[in-house]
Length: 100
Image (cartoon, rainbow, N blue to C red; front, side, top):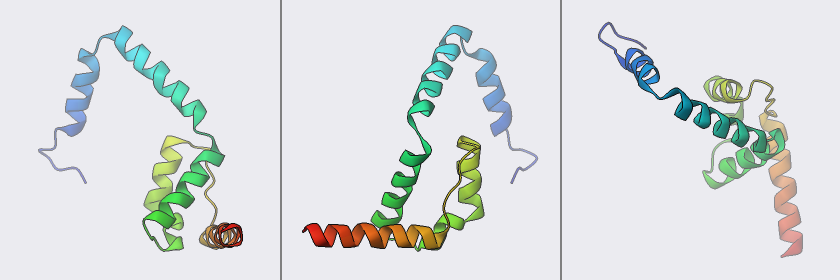
């Protein structure tokens, strides 16, 4: 929510204008290279790990704001539904139990 006295976007624009273009281009290249390493499969496994480690309800993966964040970062992302997350976690748990 923006307020009339909120200068955060203006401050960001001023910062961008002051940045050295060469330095900015290097940062952009670095971010693009990192983004290429972040495949959808890696994102999915990190999401599973996060849900388990933080003890979130599986339905968190269907939260509209969370999905919006993912889509902002990687527009082609498709996050599985809570039932799929639950099934995968149970399967991983049973494999871990069987091997232990």
